[in-house]
Image (cartoon, rainbow over all chains, first blue to last red; front, side):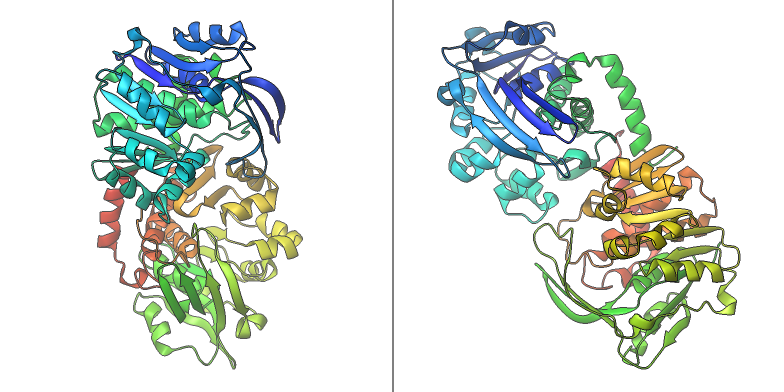
Length: 303
Length: 303
């Protein structure tokens, strides 16, 4: 089983959706990813929090066996994001982004993390993502996410990063923005030409597309009648995806990538059922396997 | 094998997409449906055209064995629709709707059509859809489509129709509009409560959802890199869907509905590859079976 390293945000989120709202609930890409990936394999986290970061939120990860010794605690306030979902719930309207201690985040990989096998560069400045990569010794597999902000403001740095990663895991809208493609299918091919051997496009309730070895694999998300809060779904997907790959250690074999996408999508289907990590922190492999069986019925053509 | 009856429009469409444009190309729900369904089973068409309707366009259907004797030819111009697709190609901007002879369309079902087994009520006034139903003797299965215009202007008539049909085949956006549901999963259940035993939600490139016997079945569309023109995709889906059901005569068995959705989706994947019926009129069961095999690779979790 491979060791996973994730570098990303630990945050407090205030979120409003048609189902209700939460104030300063635990969030951040590294938290969603860590809770998800740790269902499959050991995870190490690098990030930064302020002195307002509650002990219980570190414990949330350590209880899952996640190593949080790489999380820097510095003077100041933790990253705070506020957003609202309405209508189709597929996109958040950002109401407030207070970077706080995250503004000066310089990821330093602890010595004992440098042998990590699976690296996930969550959505941060592509310059920092590259800095992280330089510090890791000889990873077996590197995946990254990004967002429209970096595509627009640091495109060259992002394009440079793409030459050094194995898999880009990206939202559909951002994949189109990055490539100028009219649709996700075309975007996959254009992204692959930029460097990554495989491309995973996240489509919210519409599931995902995997493009690897000139083949497409696509499935919808597990049907959820009441989506409470989509926040963290993308990072949960990435966590389940990388977690599965680290657990099975089959490299970039297409069949492994397919299964990894399915598990990523299923983990995310739990995340959206509650605010913050409400559902995700109670997820275990038993519940996940049950949903896998239900999911197979939803997407299987044959009996 | 069951006899299919479709009541819908025969039209000329002027369409502009990022791939180019066509002027007064053949279109209309009954044409797309007829070309698609006739790949599986015999089809009878009821509709209306003006005296400008070209003989070649009737021949297009009769060459597929479609019975067009129920198409009325009246004084005046054929229905003309003009629209434009840009951006994500999932929705057309209507530039012009000239109903012409379609404005006074009163569907009369010829005596020799009244024993039809499978009835598809394409998107027309729900009052007329109900009129059609009254004229058909004892159909085995009735499916219908509708659109936002009727949902907004004739909701009560539409709701009355829903009590008398077996399957509603509807776009995702329109399913939400009809039910007020936040997402397609919830919309399926609310529509079923209105009467139909099964609900099929069309999601464009994201495929479809089938809701039947309290179970969901969902898959994405076949990946098409270059979508030339989405016009007619929904009616092609319906044609493949009803065609499959009429061919196999398995009633509303969920397994048959699943396969029917897959074939509907695959027929539509050809339609979008060219303007008008360019690709659809050259489609045959050999090409369709080949795509079915390719599609199974795209959506199969297992090897």
